[in-house]
Length: 298
Image (tube, rainbow, N blue to C red; front, side, top):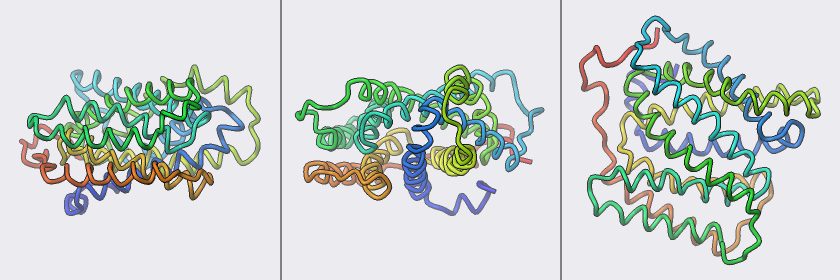
């Protein structure tokens, strides 16, 4: 099970990087499913299967919930569901790497706003330059609806990072995640269920969606929650600047979407910014807090 002493021995940045790769792999593998049941249907199926898997793994202690926990859990669930739905709607229209680069503006903004050291703003600003190079807006042929969906997903992504850190501090391991993903499934049901019913539900769609759900949200979001418990918002947000590069890489390997030389330059810039931000990336862990603050997964 994810969590515990073994997880604390793993560098948080490595968990974040693994999560990013898993998220982009899941997004790329979702493209054939989107063609059958739409972006909303695909996101909803992923949330439904993810909720089942997480309850089987984590077995959350419902009785340990406090009334003050509910707003953050509900908010994180809703944000997670629509972050996935909106992003898949973007991927349906624009290349994966471009969608990730635009979406990244959300956590990039959070990284700047949450920083206590104003000198640290140089790294998000540098990463922004890389994002511009990755999106190549001067070509003028980007699907505006796709860009809009990616920007909306980015707003959800920024909120997701803040709320995930808050929930991760309250619940150990992936118990918090096992409580928020069912909320995500319920929140996206009005959008997803009609697309699934009205789509072309071939025999392989449900097994494919289940397999993708195991990658994301189960593994990827679980690793992100553990990483955020031990990193600052600025460090984690700027480290995420590497994710557009992963989007391009997975898009190339899985979807045959070839990046341009300018996009490769953007990759180098965002990796530089993400690496530099790690120098001030430590965060006081919840293991230093009183035992009453956290709850162990049974």
